[in-house]
Length: 78
Image (cartoon, rainbow, N blue to C red):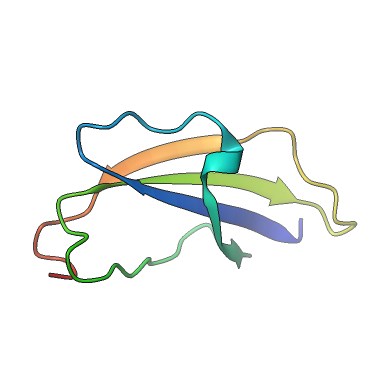
C-alpha cells in the first residue's frame, strides 16, 4: 500500500455527517495509521467528519471508504 487518503469536513455538533464523499475536502495522505489534526480558533465545539481510503502503490484507490465522526474539544483552537 502507498498509504491512505484522508478527507475532512467540519459540521455543527447537531448536524448529521455528510454521506457523500464529494462533500469532504482533502486533508492529507498518510502512510501511518495515525495523524494529528490542528483546528483554528472558533472551531471548538464543532464536529469533524473524516473519510479515509487506501491507495495501492500503483495508484489504484480502494473501494472501501471509512467515515468517522469526532467532536473538537471546546478548549481546542479557541
